[in-house]
Length: 390
Ligand code: ARG
Image (cartoon, rainbow, N blue to C red):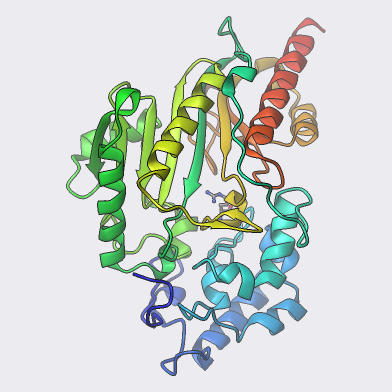
């Protein structure tokens, strides 16, 4: 389905916010926001403003910007401000709280997206431009933990959108199926170390699914942040996972983004993991047309993933540093790292294992993003050794 096809009027949310779940977003007249949607936004905006939410949405959605944007819609899909902010309105504990329903939303609602992007990606200003893609070579990065003292596993992923399709809130059931067909065919054509099989979520055995989630291969179901953003519609239609035979290269289909391309393995050999992801992206890029914006880089549903869309992470044990949470947080800030729980964001650190990754994905090339993460993890390991001996 093409971006300039007829506007979608029947966009519904399946989320925790039942009041947001049933109404229509845009008026029948096509390009105007209905009174019902306006009222909904006003009420929810007031609630957010009066809340203790620490989200970037709350910080940057001032009354002035809200009033300026509340009646705007995107040209091809009729997406409203409510599409963009519903997740943060529903979930006051969001870190960010904002998603782009279609690529045009980044421009139409730029007065909100730009400051959030600048804040999250540490100074990517609205006048800045994402540098051209430059992967470099993974061999420049040494193994971060050759003796396996700290790092349990390493993972590098990126996200891609396929040209011609909007993001989740505007995708219809047929779009999900079309995208899945394209992505499945592309992955199944991979050869060599990438050869593997595609497993659709539809009809997947529950035991198999749970095991894939437990082993950190598959995405979890029922993320309330995504659901409230309208990203769980028609679930599990069109969703699935491709896994290579060696189980160290994966592709997620239609979860948060159209595609997530992932490389992972035990230990700390970042360069090897990175090179494998790059090889996979390049091979898939020969079959699929990825959507890249001149200024923002690769197009993703969430503004936190724009630019390179790369998140490089380790599952790591830093027992001594963990006893000094303030110091650890200070170091994370210094190295621009993000600390998450063991099962990804909004989860707990089980058995002292943290998931630590680069925070920003924009303003640097792919190579520079990996270097930033590499140097930061190295710094944390050095600090752990120091904390142990003092
Ligand atoms: N919307 C969620 C929040 O604001 C997630 C943000 C970043 N993570 C992501 N998977 N896009 O906390």
